Length: 303
Image (cartoon, rainbow, N blue to C red):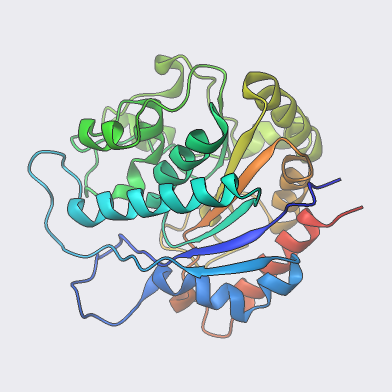
């Protein structure tokens, strides 16, 4: 059974792809929290709603010291998310954080650690996200969340969250399929940092999605007692879910993702869930948003 504290929705309307200037109208993944609410997410998962944080990533300059695009606002977003997640957990609420892009993850995991102590991470993403300010070709902060939480990202960002946040055995990378690309930019690889290698979609299929989810739940629960789940929708195949900015073949279907998520979300070891990279601008009739809501509602359904 899912913990009866589940969940409280918290919106983080940010976008680091073509970062806006202050005063530009909302676009891209900034629209995701509102679009998912409009698709019925709050009611579908039986959530309370804490509204949106008053945050935005702005500025198109790459910081010369950290190498991070829009660094000043990345720092502000990280702090705001950290405080909000910490306070929800301290109030015995389980956060469902709606991004926005994956730049929110270091703040969310830091907030969980502040409230709960060491908190493991199941990271469902089409990318390893182990770029840093030097290896990232763009400087987009959404390239870097796993580098930050494992302690190899930009030093100032790691310091801001009190990193590293994860020790070996506390990270599960589920669904990445960009290792070859990452290697061309000389990024760190998970096994070089003492973590388990990623489980590709084919590896997850070989185990069976439900079995892979159960094993991940057991591993992370044993490591720290509690874990956070982060879902980037580009873990899905581009044909299954085109409403995201970095389309990739070879990913999961919606049914496979739901089967993988259900055991991860259906346990009192769950500290919280964050979702990133749904782009409503690429979903004009809202079909993708509704399918995403339906999948999450089924994965979160109480038996």
